[in-house]
Length: 496
Image (cartoon, rainbow, N blue to C red; front, side, top):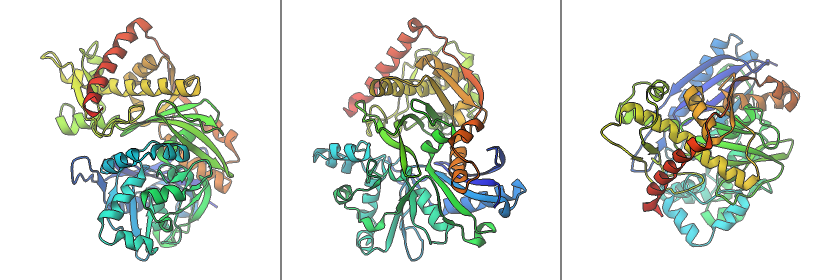
């Protein structure tokens, strides 16, 4: 068996394939961006065939560039954008519609109906989630109701449902395996996180035929093997996890109280709560962090819908920057944000507010505001939103993280990391390798095939590149926080 792990990291805007060696070092990486589709206001879709094409192309390229060949790959790990919904024909494997992306808000009306009918307590108790169009179930219900014949075909067992991981597993195994892992299942609003199985009551509530749901397995599990003609060999697919849980695992946050925050398109902060599923009183999510050997470790999660996407908007929407990396330089060109606050509610606001109808806003603009102030406000908004999550976690768990480990593309920004440490008044650790999401999937796959013997071994593979200590007084922090909270209140006012 080969000693390298191939990870397919299928994200919101790009697909990457990365080969890791037995020391969890990257030896090859291939990436491809793909098109985003916005058919109506608040709708976001992906073409599944674009994703499948890029998965094959990047996987083949990464294997070739690694120099170890298909025979050198001991297993494949998959990590993916969560909540994104696909339905496909079991006989042909063809999707019946584009994938509906996690950012999509078309389930808002159904969510309001469910809340009005008093379903929120049932959903929260069973799934650890709030009723929100962010999660998969209302997207799936929309497909069943709006694609001709879909509901009837699903009830006859002709259609399969899955998140991106499940769809890729199906395709990679030539249609032999229809399965998912506990972390992705937990984001559908159809899965009982305490019993570890699909919930019949919730499926009836959403009118989802249970016959179309995948089997649910541990994260480190040999799901199946690839069809030999796809990648040059029959390779075990041995690890799967949703991207944020994969990042927590890749950051070696294995102990109670450890936390990580990933800064990509959105921002997601997870706090390990051990084998206890802590019920949030402050509108955070309770979610499985990972399940190994049938034992579930849980986390509290705060989800911010827009982080790096705000910088992308400055680049692509306004044209005030040409490269995302410019924000670091621009932020340091000015002494402060000039009183400018950006509330990046482009697709609603996530935790702890959960206002799907909220929309983005910029406050405090004067003729003295510049591109540098806008860039700084965008970065500051990421730290402010993280601050809100940390405060909610402290209130729920009794204490916040002693150290916050960060990853994702935005974590490379020194200015952001320093400002973040100041706003949460907690040390921020940046790992030597920011590819923690892919590393987490690699760790799961490696555990399943025995490449690594246990969590202690994985913990020793993690290393710190830099630590950012807080250096702001409470007197300096207080007016910044007050300005942010005023901006949020103004943004949420029309949606309340």
